[in-house]
Amino acid sequence: MGYTQLRQGSLTERSVLSLTNFIPGGRGFFAYQAAEFDLKGPANGTAEPGLSYFLANVRVSPAARLELQGTYNRGHSLDARRLTDDLLNDRPLTAQAIEGLRYESAGGRVTVQIARQVFLYAGYARDRNNRDDEPTGSPISPISTWLSTSQGAAPRPRAPGQMAVHSSPTCRLVQTCARR
Image 1: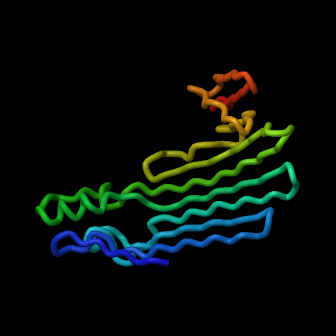
Image 2: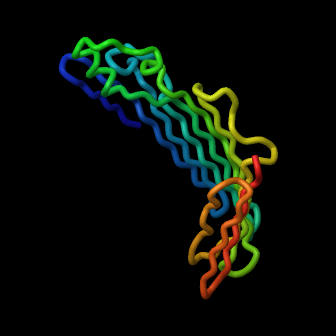
Image 3: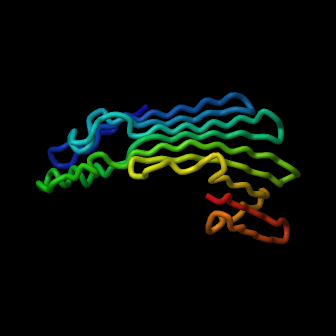
């Protein structure tokens, strides 16, 4: 746990409580969480106090060649330094700047070791924020699958539906991305 207070002139830019937690569960499990809380709203209380962000990452290995991973991230991002600077210099603040970007994402990945130093990954994630009409992701998109070896990872495709292939002397890597 930690506490940070940032001041700019006579104003409090941020007053933040930070928390981190790591839970090892033997060889096959771990969980990591991190959170940050604004005790006083950023920019001397102009923005709302409360959760700045929360992050959780959980990994479970139920079998020797199988790993499951889940992630969750939620929070809001705003430019407290600029808001405080605008207050100090009597510049008007916009509602969008005070609210900031609120976001949330959740995802998961399955990793299977199919041969020595060869892994198959499949994952899914869903994101949303207060500036988009609808969340991204769906039951079929964006889904990524790829083969990898311990010597590198597959390059990402340039657009949904495209295939990226990378060949090397030791392996051939393929990644595809489902159409949206």
